[in-house]
Length: 240
Length: 103
Image 1: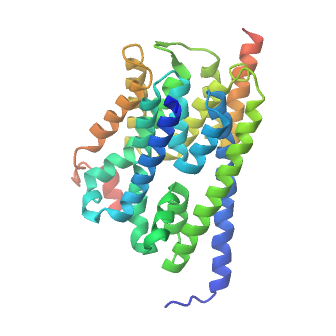
Image 2 (image 1 turned 30 degrees about the horizontal axis):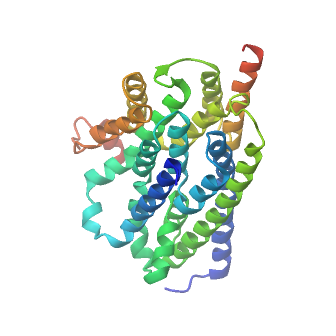
Image 3 (image 1 turned 90 degrees about the horizontal axis):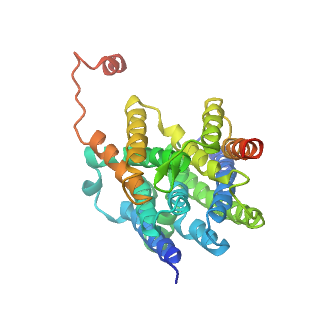
């Protein structure tokens, strides 16, 4: 079963999808480059973040916390907590990619939301591997080029607050959060976390309220989900 | 090296270690339902908290200003499935216009 009926056509489709995703993510990169510089990061720091860290939400988190007056170490901690999901993507990808040595180290750096999503959406392991690598490379290229462009553009602006870039950072976080609000539980966690962070803001050092809000996720995720058919209305319907 | 550069270096190293751990750590360590659930909900909590603080935080205080109007625009744009750049640039424009009209 190693040959599909139309291997070339399918592979082309995967490549097209990969670069489509890459270009779309590039627009986030543009936003990231602009907002990082607007929040006091130098051009080189911004470029280093995109090339070395290369996981969007974490980069936005560091920039957001530091921009809001938090300590750099607090920002890095929030960013790392956000990056922990990549470990689970690696776990999904490892048996599919079966990579060793240097290739494994490269695969790790490309293990992000988009490359994993495209890879696991493919019908065969061969196409999954193609999807992972092309998407990873496409996003890496687009993300970094866009970061530089965005950073350069804002480097010319004297006062970021005047052009509303502080509001743009909040909007960027919300846009990253939005697709994850698919379940009632996720929406409850989002609401609880926002509330807790705001309540803690006057009480503790900037940046820490964001970290503390992670406790809401842990609390919500800790109990084993109950699967009682008598009470699980949605579950029963899904089981039919 | 400045504090910011150290944070970037630590994040690069730590972030890479997290990505690589999926390839090097035995499956049973990470593949427990509770660990998976926490990992899936953590970004939701953090991004929501980041949004709230970014919009309503003012140092150690809370305030409602032009940024909140930007957020309202962002919610509307997201409900209409607008692309990322429209959401972000639109929020910035709304906040900037409001500051210009009512400083």
